[in-house]
Length: 66
Image 1 (tube, rainbow, N blue to C red):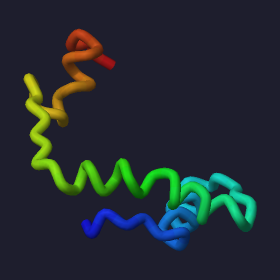
Image 2: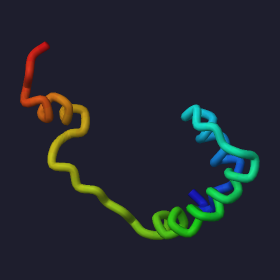
Image 3: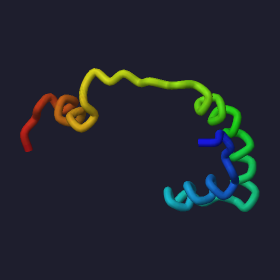
């Protein structure tokens, strides 16, 4: 990822999520989130998971049967 969020990307993600945006909103959102996205792209982030994500729901439900 290059760390640059474009208004086109914002509009595409909003459309996929069925979130209506005004015509000027995509550019404002892109300008607002670009610094944070750039910082995340610069750091090697590692998230340690205690359990496998695929089994999380089973564990969260306490092994409940259907």
